[in-house]
Length: 625
Image 1 (cartoon, rainbow, N blue to C red):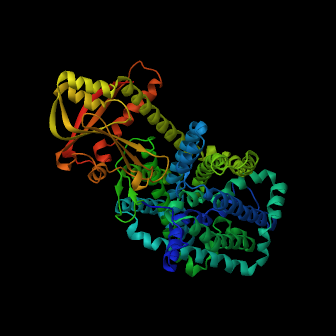
Image 2 (image 1 turned 135 degrees about the vertical axis):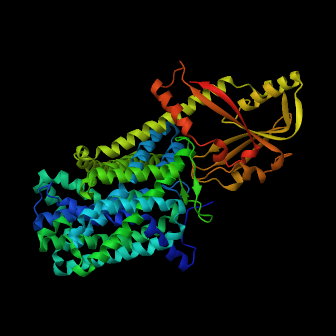
Image 3 (image 1 turned 45 degrees about the vertical axis):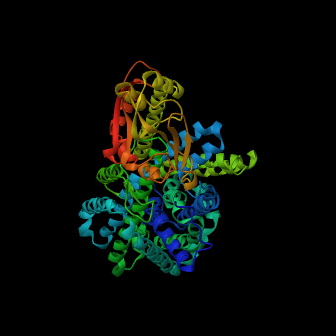
């Protein structure tokens, strides 16, 4: 089981490797923001003149956004809220739900909304990142401008096609490539700063205040573009379980933040030297001979940044399945050594088609920028709200302290959200629609499963009554073991009752197995399986898995101490339910229909629980909701 990674006791080589891994996995997204963030701030659509006052003001806003949002909120505050070493909105939701049971329903709704927003982010990031890098071709060779969109689509298809092979093969080069990226962008910024070191005054927050006060008409639209500089901050928290808290913090302060500040300040110096650079201040930092290599390096960096979001979407989808908010899906492991490296074909296809559609629909990274900011800042607000519950009920902060910190962070997030809301009509509607769609789907699936379990429980026979039925009917006991999967810890499984009703036989050994998902990422092996002996050769077993784990029932039982259990003489009984709409309440008719459709898309339980199909017997039944 992967535990929280720390490097206080690892050798020097391992500590260096962890930091390189942190660069490759965590910082690709925020590290490629200089490609478009400052350009969008001075977009002609905003009407901000390239003067020394406006350039220093915008640079100051960018610098302090990085400091307050990333350094203070994420690195300093949120990364303390780990769920057994794991981060991310669903991990935080689980932590908050356990810490404050009375607020569990609210925490769940907030977490699901955040998950939907992050999935929207996962669709937009590959599109805007790769497109912004390939657009450098127009600067290097204007005649190739017409190839930007086709080449971007080709790269996206290639990127998503490689997902089935896993990231273990190319993962070793992710860190070094991103390290080279930060060295190059920091160096380019330093080169431009050498000509105008006075730009360093932008590090004073006074210039941001003056800009906002003197140009209130432009402040709102510019602030929405400034936020693009901190997109990717959620990855610091979400990917904490991969490399640990310390490597992320050290690489942020030692490499990433200095390189980003140098590059943004350098872009500002280039703008002051020649306002015409506003069309592409990032690529204008490079000398002519370095433009093509810089475009190639930027493309590699954006592909890596996209890879991090794609892998994050896979992990998020797996968590949703294990927590019961999404139908079972085929999940393939791409590495025998790293449990976190998975591939989900359905999610991969959805992300690829969405990214290609976004490139075709918006046509440029500038047009996509409007959609990008809304998704990320809304997700950040959900994280801030969940963190309040953790601070109040897990860290035991006083109400005054927890509320004070949350109000300050919400004011920061809210200012960016308000600035981005003006972009809803320009494309910001897309992530909101995506988030709303996934929210409805996840809540419908969860509610439908609850109603179905209630229906099954209502028709279930008490186990003592089943024992009496066995005695009255003089059940034949046949050799071997039967494992009946059940969704509850009480009563007689429907498959057992139906099998007995039709065949009048009961196996010599019977295991009533329930699989439960814990509100923590991983469960220690010693707590994996609980066995309770019952009467008549029956055993009740509860298998406990974390929401970052995947059940392997055949392997689990093969190593369990179960009386009479032998893999070759064991039959697994599953109930296969067909959902029919009825007059029962609890959910609107359209949601019942949607739940039925989702049920049809679910992966068979046999494959999900990794049980040999030749040992499986399915018992069908209709359930009318």
